[in-house]
Length: 105
Image (cartoon, rainbow, N blue to C red; front, side, top):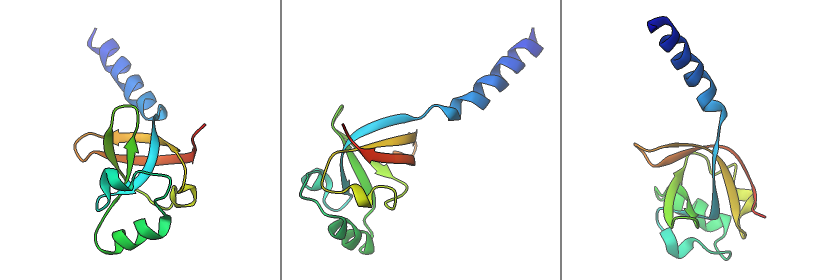
């Protein structure tokens, strides 16, 4: 029985990272917050704020939460429109490990 449970757990842990969650909304940063979560927020603004210590984020329209992004490079060319970010969320840091990003449909 223990061996079966251990095998099932190992398989579940091996498969779990393959499933990415997704969030859709506007990219912002910790300085601008929800005020920056618009189509008018530019990549230059986010980069300027990041030089001052801000971190990139996405305002998730589905639940109104703002989540940190571990990479701005994957979303900066998508500024000015809604973005769908795929990745995995670390609930301890509220940070998405961005696997991919694309214009939202």
